[in-house]
Amino acid sequence: MKIEILGTGCPKCKKLTELTEESVNELGVSAEIIKVTDINKIIDYGVMVTPALVIDGDVKVAGKIPSKEEIIKWIEEKK
Amino acid sequence: MDKCCCNTKSRLIYSCSGAANTGEMADQISRKLAKEGYGNMTCLASVGAHISGFVESAKGADKNNTIDGYSVAYAKKILEHIGVSPTKSYALTEMGVEKGKTPSTEEIVSKISNKIKKDLSLKAEQENNTEGDKNKIRCERMLTK
Image (cartoon, rainbow over all chains, first blue to last red; front, side, top):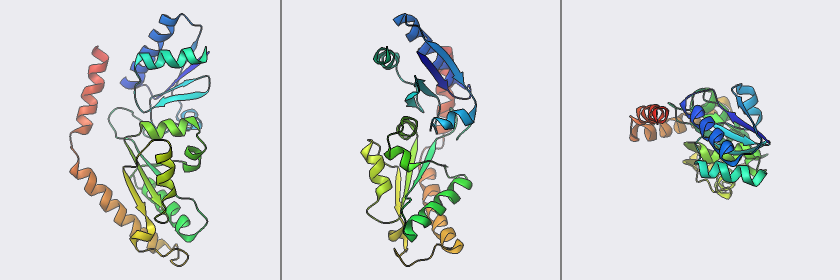
């Protein structure tokens, strides 16, 4: 599973990364978590507001921080 | 796209892209507003096609403003279709443009852009001016949790 956090590295992006890492650890799944800070790559996803979370190419949320429960649910759906 | 996700409000602009003069004008007005800092223009067709990045951006943006050619308001309806109510919606035929008649000249595009800018600025003034500070405090608190 490939999980990408899109954003330029501000506090919201860091928080989303933290929650995602916790979710992956809790579920014990094998996932590669990548931080994407390049604006052009972010826009290629159609993302206009950050931070954003992408799981296997599917943008799950943009512009806000989801709850850990939501992140866990999205990861489980992709398992 | 905004460079910082914390201290700035995200404002997206969606334009009608129809074949009539009103569609052309809506597009030009949207580009002018984006260029002059009134938001980021994004792709309405991609929202309609349910491309996840565009859909989630609409759902996560602080403000979504639509510029339609006329009152049937397809841009507004496409956003509503994905469960997003536009913050502000404009229909050019309600601002003095005649569908099929008014030419999309630089003068007319500027005139209507100015009306929209004035309306958007007035709305921004009416909102709480400390919103940017509130966002910053919220972000700082997140780091200390």
